[in-house]
Length: 108
Image 1 (cartoon, rainbow, N blue to C red):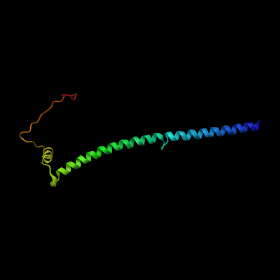
Image 2 (spheres, rainbow, N blue to C red):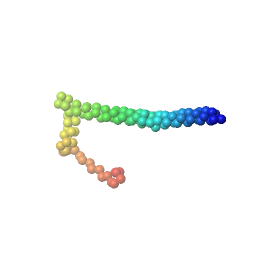
Image 3 (cartoon, rainbow, N blue to C red):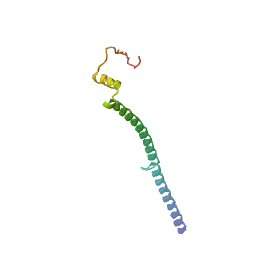
């Protein structure tokens, strides 16, 4: 009887130990620092950063084009006039200024 009890106890302890190790590893595969959830968050960050990179690249290209148009070798008179008006706060006599009355809700 004693041998059967030891054999049963030995098998039970092995099963409990195996179940515990399996639960531990399973938890860390899902919730761990390098687990599935962390991987999904990183994948989402990569996607968001890619979109942001595309937007910033487009903005940079537009700014580079505007700077190119303001260089002396390829000066665009319209762009120069626009910048001068904005920076110096000038306008022409024939320019008309339209004031729009906006109420508190932001609607006209």
